Image (tube, helix red, strand yellow):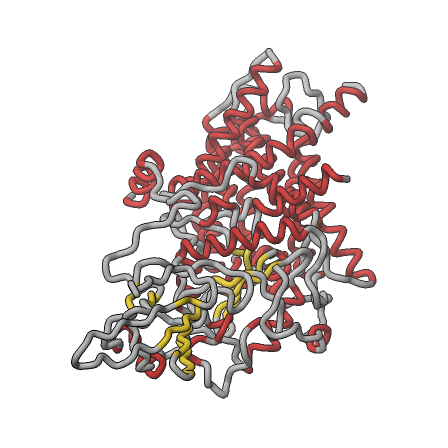
Length: 177
Length: 304
Length: 143
């Protein structure tokens, strides 16, 4: 079984599939994320594919300070991502809510709701920085193996947010790498 | 043909042992050539293999009841049908076969798209239903042309036996039929300009929206095997007859490779068409030629 | 047929992709990380007032002050650099790196206040010492 595990780690690092989600961002980071798929930066040289369904993806890329309206959606989509998964917070908004720090419509940094593995700072981050963040997340995913991160509750088909809504919140500010 | 040659055909060449690496190779060729034509470097060589192994290691969402069993069954059915279709191609000389095995090959080639449609509906998600409806509309459109083209080739040669079709000398009607099949191939393989069921950002991957893990690996594999089977069909119909088996095999692989490159160039050069444009294209433009082909085949048959 | 000639030229003309760890050069006016020079800072805290994202924190104590900057909170607008009268802040072309925990990129400096220069003799400026492990080095004044 050791050979199979090593093969699996090797393949997980080389085939990161992304799902992109916007939690109220200004779209600057979303544009830079899509720009990283263009010929100049070409994320596909690392095997990155932007997937249409959260069930297909390994890495959830989230932009935007988390607005009240999007908290439930984020938790649901995080529950829908299968298997070993990683979360990349793109931009400085999900990490610290950046310039929106006093806004009444926000619900705090992203790691109050889901465990985040990699933060890519910048406003917006350059596409090459985003690719570096995704590569780091793929390496983390390969090391993590089959252990799921804390509070990952899988949402079965047909159920809505109920399975994830009572996930316990992580301690503010600290996530395990 | 005895049992051992039949099993060797089904399992070794051009069966499973050849078809699965060939599927990964053709998937890579498509992605890499589209990338090179778009001015970027594409994925590394083993990328479809890495994707497959990684998907085997992911967990699947919890499912229950008959719906869950059904959802697990469709990808397996698609993979076996596509692998069987590849195994039946008359690549090697003296492959044997039986009278009417062309019809079996066509049925096996149809099954993966039927499984996609059924999978979209059985996933109980609206995105799956929309994707399946689009796939069904697409299937109805291109299948008429596809089947008419193949039947016209078979009628002009007076046989429904694959081996005979591959080895008889060709007529102009034969090439018209091959051209019609080539026009239907982008729709069959879900690549631009007819990649509607695969619209990723539009309908969240359509029929595949609730699939994950090993089932998704099976869907990707069936997609690759469909590539091998469809391009292999064109290659066997277009290839000249060779007596040496290794020469025939090499020509088969080379011709399939050329067809893959042609389809990738089409995919890189076009954008996705909407469903009404697609249906209109197949029913208005290409149906005329298919009807012409089959009517001239029947006419020549009644004349002789 | 324009698209076909474009595809043909792309196929033989090579790709314009940067291979993975390579990063492109930035333009001349690129606004990147904010650099702090403790020797020039007088502790007026205009940068904290002007900062749009509250990335700069300023805490005054007796005889010294602590200035800290979190690139993870920064929006790289440059208002602090514009507002600094003594040009202690500057923006260079380096992008902030990827990090794993919140607050990992934060730098703090504790700067002792310089005594007001006496008109008769030149007062020796005090030395500054960084308190956390920053990405940039601090300059020491000759005592």
